[in-house]
Image 1 (tube, rainbow, N blue to C red):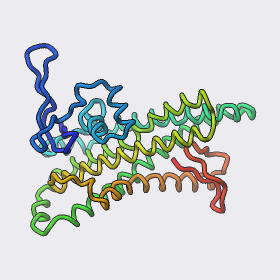
Image 2: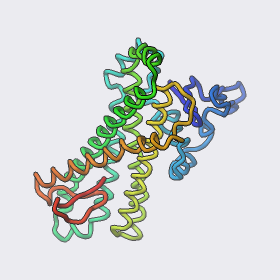
Image 3: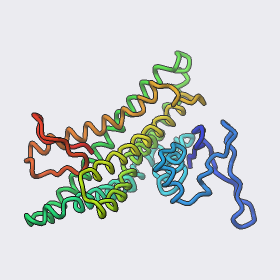
Length: 305
């Protein structure tokens, strides 16, 4: 397993030590910052979710890197590249990623169902369009995730090349043997950072029960996008720290903070563009907006997320 410190993102091999007394554990101390590696390990999932809602990066690091079930997805150790590269190349972690994406698509489809059931039942076409919306949500979620992964990889590679000196570049080349494993792990974290926050659309569904309006859907979508932004930024920040072999707090650099937000913006733009093109190609009534509907313009109907 590959764990990280939730404070400074330094890698560690264990989170706690277990003693002979039942239920007695001692949290591992981080060698980089001197703090406990992961205080969230003693907390219930509900408290972790509450801190994620408060947009605390430490909670996102705990959920994505140190807590099951997400921490075990493609969690090969980069130090064991001889045995793990083959496993990672066989996409052993693909099934749980697809499962997360499918659950997110189901939630978004039910959100569309709850928001439009009154309108569509009058025409009698509501049930026939559920599969179309589910397929659209599943494909759109993966398009957004792939675009985010590609843009994040480009940004990390350019940042590393720009900051490394000639000597460090030569040393960096010695790490190419484990690039397959580390890249797959990084890509899986980005994928989770995009798909898992969509689970919070459940909050929007509960809010729609009390007030079914476009404003509620808008606020819910913006909230999920903000969670996706902090999740992607957290993963990119951890990857930059690891690739640059530095303990400096990179988030204090304004340019790097902006770069951390670019991958998600690219993913949203690519998804919106693909939905727009598909709706014009198939027909405006075939695809439904399940996020933020934009007003009609010279470009036609547009939808974000």
